[in-house]
Image 1: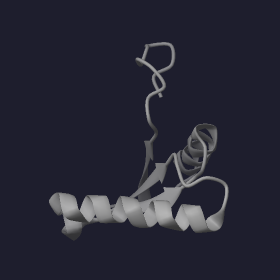
Image 2: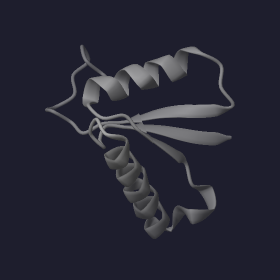
Image 3: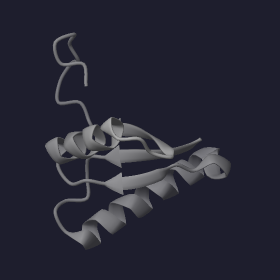
Length: 81
């Protein structure tokens, strides 16, 4: 199954989002996972990444959507995402 990772980062411009996708791909490839590379979607801000991920997760796709955001603080049961 294919995986698509919705990433917080890249800012609002297309060129920064392209740079973010390239950086994530380079990171994963250098980690030794070149044979099973996920796709990356640079979403800009944290809330945008969450919204894009939720939209992908609600509709049938031929890939597994995942979300990658940095932690603003400790995770709690009330805000698990």
